[in-house]
Length: 139
Image 1 (tube, rainbow, N blue to C red):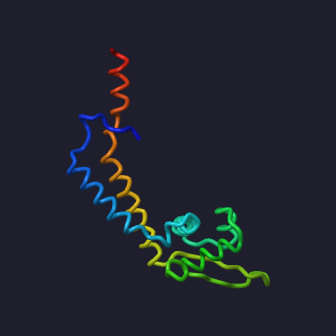
Image 2: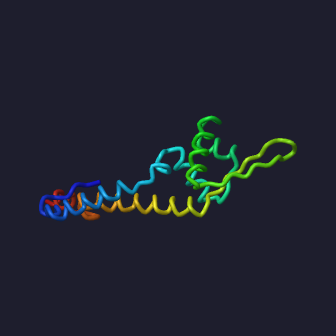
Image 3: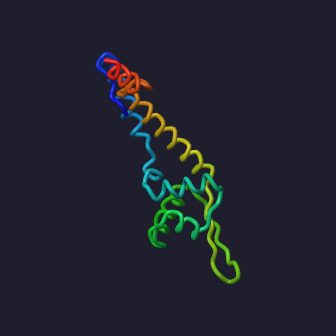
């Protein structure tokens, strides 16, 4: 990120407004999803629709116990559903996002987008660094 040149900096009111929006947005971040492993689980489930335990474990590079704890937390929150069955006499567990989980994930992504947009209030407009480099090179 390139910091804005002094003449392009937002006014104090604009900075306060951006800071206020940022704080409000941070308060809306879903802590259940925000944790790294749970974010990975929800990302995989929303993208694929359904995943089994082995796929999640291999994809996220976590231990059985660690994955189980995070899956249980998401299930308790109502964000995922669990389907257990036996395939060739071996247990096979699959997970899918619930409607509540999909909505929570979408809201989480929207909150992240608002954070990125708020951070933009403190950065230079796109291309400002290139224009400054061109001006400096010309002098």
